[in-house]
Amino acid sequence: MGLRKAFLFIAACALAALGLSACGGGGSSSSESSTTGSGGQEGGTLLGAYSSFPDYLDPALSHTLEGWTATYDTYIPLLTYDHASGQAGGKVIPGLATALPKVSDGGKTYELTLRKGLKYSNGEPVVASDFTHSLERAFILNSGGSPFYEGIVGAAQFMKTKKSGIPGVETDDKSGQITIHLENPDGSFESELALPYVALLPAKTPDKDLTADPPPATGPYVITSSEPGRGWEYERNPQWAKNNEKLLPQLPSGHVDKIKIQVLRNPQTLVNYVESGKLDWMGTEVPPDRYQAVKSKYEGSQFRIEPSFSNYFFWMNTTQAPFDDVKVRQAVNYAIDPAALERIYSGRLEGGQQILPPGMPGYQKLNLYPHDIKKAKELIAEAAPSDKEIVVWTDNEQPSDDAGAYYQGVLEELGFKVELKILSPDNYFTVITNSSTPELDTGWANWFLEYPSPNGFFQPLLAEESIAPTNGTNLPRFADPALSKKIAELGEEPVGPQQEAAYAQLDKEFMEQAPLAPYGTSTASTFVSSDINLDNVVFSPSFGQDLASFEFK
Image 1 (cartoon, one colour):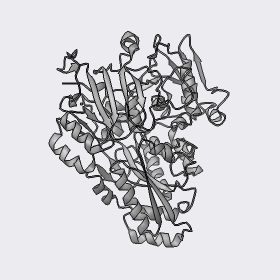
Image 2 (cartoon, helix red, strand yellow):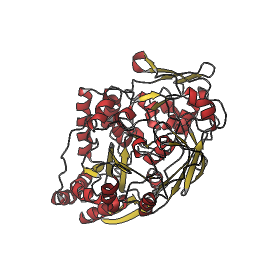
Image 3 (cartoon, one colour):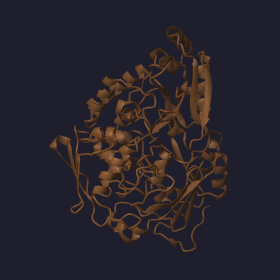
Image 4 (cartoon, one colour):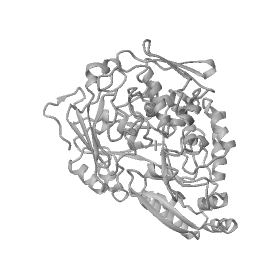
C-alpha cells in the first residue's frame, strides 16, 4: 500500500542503506519487431498476470503497489520519479512541469510551469488548471492520498466542505504557471507532488471511481480496457509519439506496443505459465511453497530478488473494545512471534516489531516486545476485557491468508473467541478502509514505500489526519494529538541527524501505545519468462516493475 523525495540527503541515505543499486515475459513478439541497439526487440505484446485485481485503476484512489505499478506509465504528475531501479529511482525529477519548483517564502510557496503543448491521449490539451481540478478531485473522492496535500492553504477546509475551491493554488492556463501556497513548510512536499494522487487529468474527469473506465493518459501508454476482477489492457498512447514524447524526453517511451494483464486466481498457475512461456511476467509474488525452487533454478536469468521498504503488520481498532485498552494491544505484540511468520513467508520476510523498516533514516532496532506468551496472558488478565469476541480480517492471497490464520491462533491462545474473515484481495483494502464496514476489529495489512522519508510511514499509518470515512490509511483509527503534532512538525523539516533521532524516538513512543503489531519487512521479486530481458527490467522502489522497461530478447 505503496515514497520519494527530490534527490536529497534522505533519499541517498535511505536507499543506499538498503544496498539498492541501479539496474538496468513467452509472450507474443510482434512479427513487425525490430532489433534495438542492446540486442532486444521493439514491439510485441507483453502478457502479464496477477492473482488479484488492484484496489483501483484510478490514479487519485489507488494506494497499493499493484495499482501504482499499473498506472506509473500512464498518469504523469507535475513532478515524477526517475524511471530507474534502486537509489536512482528515489530521485524526484520534473514530470509535466518544466523543472523542479522554485521554493520561496521560507518553504511555503512552490512555483512550477507546465510544459507547453502537452496533450492527453484523447487529444485534449493539458492546461495548468487541470492540476487544480485533479487536486480537488482527490479530496472529493476521499482519496487515501489527500492528507499529503492538506497543508495547502484552504485544503483542509475544502476537504470538509468539498466546495468553494482551494485558494492556496493559483494557475494561469496561458502561461502554464502554477503557484502553490502552504500553511507551513513541508520538507516532503516535492515528493508528495510526484505521487500519482495528483497526476493531471482533464478538467471534466468525473468525480467518481473510474477503475472500470480509466481516464485519458499523458504517459507513453494508455489503459484501453478494464474489466474489474478479470484484467486490463494497454496500448501506446497515440499522442505520445505524435506529441508528448519530444516534450518529455526524461521519460521512457516503452518497448512493447501492447500490454495485456489478466487475473488468474491461482498463483501456482502463474508460476507454471511463466515457466512454460504462456506468460511473460507475473506481478504477484511467487507463492511461499514455490519460492525457494524458483529462486534456485532461475535466479539471475529469469528471477531477481528486489529489496523494498515495507512494513507487514496486524492493525487493531483502537476506537472500540477490546483494543481500546493499551494493555490488550501490548499483549498482542508480546504474543506475536516474528520468527514463526518468517517461516510462513519462506525466507522473504525479515522479522521486526516497529514502524520504521531497516535502512530507513531514523531506524533504530527496538525490542519492546520479545516473544513472551506468558507476559501476554498476564496483560490480558490485568485488562480483563469485557468483549472477547473478535473478527480478524485478511485476504486469500498467499501468504497473507496463512498470516491471518496464524494471528487467529494467537488471539485464541490469549482467550478470545475469533472469527476469521477472508476476502478477495481485489476489494480487501477498499473494505477495511471503509469505516462503515461492520466488525472492523483487527486484521492483516502491509505498507510499501511511497517516498524515502520516515514521514511516509508515520503520516499515512498513524496520524489523525489519515483517519477517514473511506480510503483512510490509519487502519487502527489511532488518534493521539501529541504524537500527530510531532509527525507534522518533523514533516516540515529536511531529514538530518537530529530529525533521525527524533523519528527513532517517535517509533518507540508509538510502539509503546501499540496500535499496530508489526512483524517484519519483506523483499519483493521479479519473475519473467525466458523471452524477456531480465537485466533491463526496472524495479522502482515505490512503483515496482516499470512496464515501460519490459523488452523481448
